[in-house]
Length: 296
Image (cartoon, rainbow, N blue to C red; front, side, top):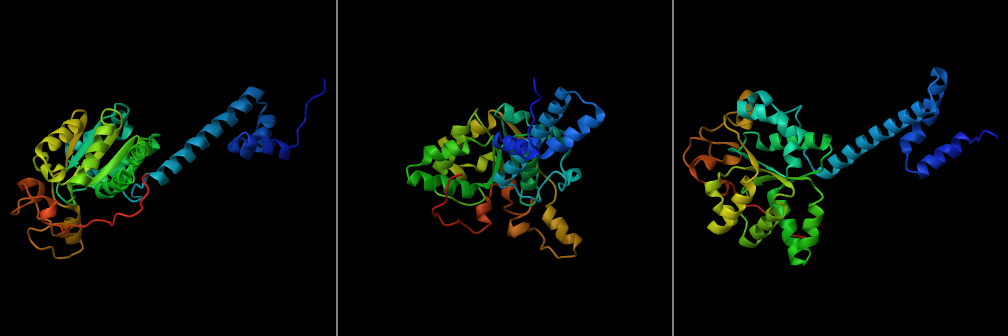
């Protein structure tokens, strides 16, 4: 029986048609190494399979990072972990492993402006992507507007299904922008749809007692809090504002009692999460125009 032969170019074409690009890229190089070192055929094939799987995982992570909208500069490497409260430092490795995602649990992060909430949650998001999870990072008001546009177009359910493909949705600055009842109703619908099915990670300047400013009535507020905290890890960031500290390090004079964007500092009169004032009391209301934004 004659030994079958195939030209290298023909082999490369076949492998690409089978969607095995790493096989195609490394087949010749690995073949030469296998001949020199006397590998068995199964060892040669196994090595190529491992390379294909490794490259596929790398490409998947790169694709998921592009689709996540995570801030590229807010990673674990750039996070000042030593400035985090000791309890959060202990919790951080476990959160980055992603066990809470497997259990469809939530992470709720609270603190005054400048305490590092966004950076912390974005860093966790980056680590989760590298663990193989899909993550979407979005300012809360932007997601709400996308949901509202979908509802007005009678496309809310398809929109929610598309969002469902993300294992984790990071909602940044919940309550930072004042929004009306219809907008908050679609947010409540989104949170209810993910309850015990998918995870949400939330950052907010507002403690729970102030969430009636977000959901507009006591009953909806209680229902939203109940769904979120039922299976949740709660992180509380305290201490000085990173931004204020950085400004002082650059010898920039910071007015006493103020924080970033003029929000009142902890301990000052009317301080955000500490005293019951909403960030909306300190920050001018701003909304992006509701246009033909596609729900992702």
